[in-house]
Image (cartoon, rainbow, N blue to C red; front, top):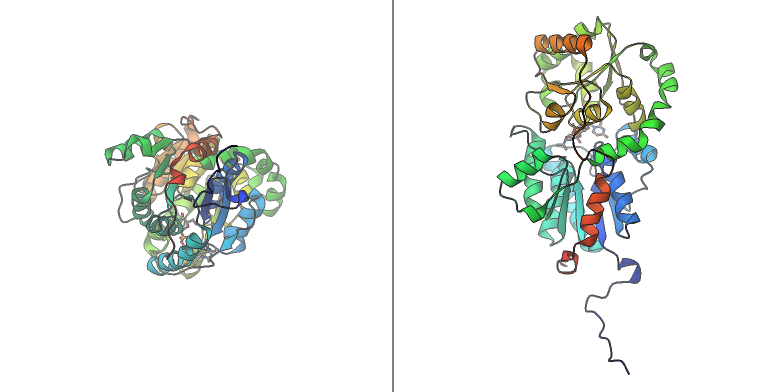
Length: 387
Ligand code: UD1
């Protein structure tokens, strides 16, 4: 007779025997980062719950991304909406705390650097869940940037630091993180870009019908950072620079809700060569970038996407947390003064830039993340605690 096998103390239902990763997204740039991670964990035998904080809630800022990328509806929607940083972060924390206790995941996985990222990481750490940060180690060293605060704090709270590039690993090492916490996995946003590039390009004819200037050579611009669009003087200077570039080739500007609001209140007229359109979905914006001669942006993710596409990018900020897009990609950081922006644009239009791609930006970053999470044995030792 075999000896009686004792029941484990923490017996879970069969469907919960797999590693349970609670995945958080809340704002537009989070969705393309999360999609390949959800797929890789589930196809590797893990179990995911998807929580949408509702930081972004408009059709064009959220639903269109879920639909186009084939991300299922979230199991939990927190519906927190907009507010000051304190209000938004606090509302996410309160709502997410209940979810973490109820779902008792092995790991809480957060992506990027938005308020949803830091809020959920903080709750998870306090509840005793393991925290995984996808896109760890990026640093602009500009503490006035809300995202920089979010990055540094999220990394500090994390057990697994998934770095997209070697510079991020160096930053973490300089800050004293242990080697066994840090995993160089590549860039999940680029996984999604490669998976969708053909579908996106197929939409160009329809996009050209909606935005006729796309028939010829064109540039793309995006602006949404408060430091660029909330100050009327800075915004007017940037629009004037885009206008000067627009004398050479049309500049298409898909506008974030904040930018639309600032432009509506601005006394400066939109120059003829600048074409403001509503914010675009994932596939349309990817198609737009793919066909552009030049992209001008204050976004972080677009610096990476243009590098992967080999399209020249000018970053309208003083710093970048993604220096690999400069050292190994197509990006130049040109600041926010009109004159250097225009002269860099003219230079790029004349000479182009050499397409290069950073190591491990190969479409397989999410697989590497899943491999780490699903083979680690720490899940059995650390569980979120009941109140
Ligand atoms: C957030 C992220 C930023 C990211 C950006 C991408 C933080 C600190 N910032 O900035 O890193 O690059 O998302 O878009 O998390 N609004 C709408 N509809 C929406 C969402 C927002 O109209 O669906 C408007 C509201 O007026 C809101 C404002 O946009 O107050 C800003 O939204 P918020 O999420 O606070 O920050 P973003 O500027 O979008």
